[in-house]
Length: 153
Image (tube, rainbow, N blue to C red):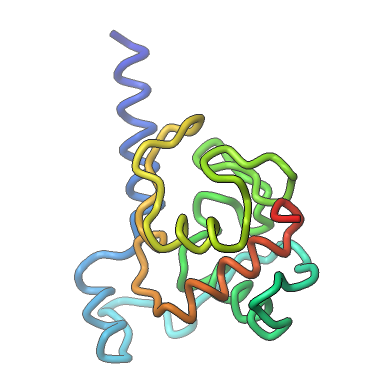
């Protein structure tokens, strides 16, 4: 029974961490403002993985923009780590091992857009777009950055 409680707690924390913002944050994002009590400046993780070359169908600018989204508004860093090397909640994106897809640029875009409802080796599902509201261009940019980390090659 104790193991079940611990698993339930981990899942709850993972969903909270990976699920994006609350309604107040979403309303603020939609209007371009900050939620009440929010810090004046958004902080991003200090350690980020250096991006590599862009995949076919993307540019170096897409990779750079994707890195910025990954480490801020996209919430990706929350579960995958600021360097993309994974955590207990989500897999390493910098190695050549792909768990839920084959690692092509198109497959990565699909995963970013739709999420992973039933992960094969991690405790919590990945919400679509990490719980953020991303445009199709932003999805493509995040996918280009993830692909550039090394696992998509």
